Structures are given as structure tokens and as C-alpha cells.
Length: 400
Image (cartoon, rainbow, N blue to C red; front, top):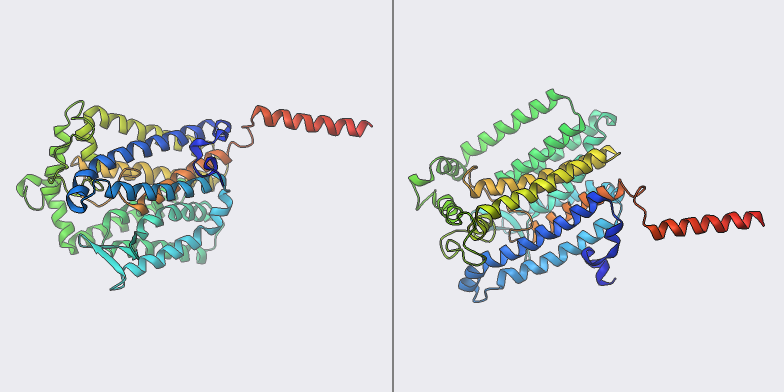
């Protein structure tokens, strides 16, 4: 396998893809490139202070990026039919990994949450790896809802519920909510009856309310979100420092690498609050440009969904849009004080191998939908001439 096959941005075959596929391809790599730059800037001071190597986190992020790009290339070049067939097994395998995080001694606890499994020196976050398989299987399941028996429906609804519950028990309310909203919106796009959807939405709201009522730290986060300045050195510290970073950026920003809040003030600056560093260094205009990129990405995803001829492909495009754009907006909402503090990473920006791999896989599935739905109409001039030559030779041989 040569470099052109591993990294799709080097291959000339991209020029033969559909318009939406090409745009999504280049926007994904622009998003990734900017994210790596910001991750480098956000992580350098803390990496130097804690590890004695300013590139400590950045080098590891590059390794995960290469792994993610290998998966990206494989997905873009392979059939969605194959991935839809194995999606159910992917959900079940990752669900098993989610259960393992709950086993004492196997799960790795960081900042009070047990969301990781360590395989040697490599931490894996199953809740992130679940997202691509959840999108695929929900598209397959809800796309065939009206052809399935009630037994099959109840089995998979139970499995989806178990997935959400296992993530909630880590505890990880934000990822649970994101996965729940993804399933709900895919079901809505599939045309499920509103009384099913309404009952499910009510149940989800009640479950979230119950979780906040039981978990003291979640309740304190909500209260600190309402008034972070009431305890600026305690529960409101993260949001206060994030708001100071965003506000310090002004209109044009302080410049790349010149954030002050990332130096010992802003917590988790290379992951959960990486947008705060971005906003401080690139200012209001930088924030607007990032939101514009997300708007274009979401619009293209909707165009792909509308053009898709198969219901499963339509739902995959919807699911990818919800996770990639929705999660980005949730992360930005937390950093700007619009939403309570959560642990959701910013796709293709935040530090984390599982998040990087999952985000690149989701982006690849969307591009693959765009490619498959337009392959019949997108033919290169060389291919067209080759086909015409073959037809001409066949016609001449018949006449002889």
C-alpha cells in the first residue's frame, strides 16, 4: 500500500468524486489541520510543566491521527453494505468494553469518572468508539423499522437502552445525552410515529433529571452553571476561567500560541476547554469562522441525505451530522457558558485517541455515502473514453 492509498488527500481520484464528497473531504482535512494546530498550542505549556516535553501530548495525538487516517482511508474505499452488516457486532463488542469499565480493577478512573480501559500504556474510551457503530446500526435498525417484527424491535431497543445506561453509570451524562439524541433524531428522520418518539423523549428527560438529582457533582455543575461567579474558586472555577479566556480574545484574538489562560489557569485546556484557547488566540472572528465551517459541514451532510436514494444511507448522513456538528456545538456551548459543564470533546480538536478515531470514522462514513449515491453519475473522462473504446471494439468484432 503506497502513501496515496493511506492518506486520501494525496490521491488524484478525489477529483472524480461527487461535489459533496469532495467538499466534505477537504473540509474534514481543514478541520483536522486547524485542530492539530490548536491542540499543539493548547497543550504545550502544560505538557512542558508536567512531562518536561512540550510536545508530549501533540506527538501522541499525531500517532492517533495517523491511525485514524488509516481507518478513514479504508472506510472511504469500502462499501457501506459491508459496514452495515457488521455494525450490530460492533455495537455488541463495544458494549462489552463498556461493561468492562464498570468492573473494579479493569476500568481506569480519571477526574472521578471511570470511562477508560488501559491496554498496557494505551487508554481506550469505549463510549467514543461506540458512536460510529451506533450511527450505523441505528440507521440500519430504524431504516427497516416497518419491516421488522416486534420481537426484533424490542431486542434492539433494549440493546440501545443498555448502551445508554452503561455510559450513564460511568458516569458520563453528556455522552449519554448525545447518544440518546442521535438515536432519537435518526428515528425521527426514519419516520417513526410521533407517540413513540414523544414517550421516548419524556423518558430521557426524566432519566436525566433523576441522574442529576442522585449525582451530587452533576447537581453542583448545574447550579454553578447558573451562577459561576457565586463560587469562582470552587464549583464555578472551570466556567469562570473559560469565560475569561473567551472574553480575552477580543475581536481578532491574541495570536497563535499567545493565550494566557492556558498557562495554569484554564483546566483541561487541551481537551474539554480547547475551544476557550482557540477563542482567546483567534478571537471573535476565529469563532465565527469555526461556526461557519460547522454550518457548511452540516449543510453538506443534509444535501447528501436528501440526495441519497436508500433510507439507510440517508439516516447515516443524518446520524453523522448530529454527532459531528451537534457535539461540536455542545462543546462550544459549554466553553461559552450557554450549557452546563460537561466532558464532551470537540471533534478533531480535543486531545484523545478514541475521539480522534471515532470522529475520522464518522467523517469517512459521510463521504462514503456521498460517493456511493453519486458513483453512477460521476465518471472521469478517461473512464468514459475507455468504455467507448471497449464498446467500439466489441461492435467491430461482431461485424466481422
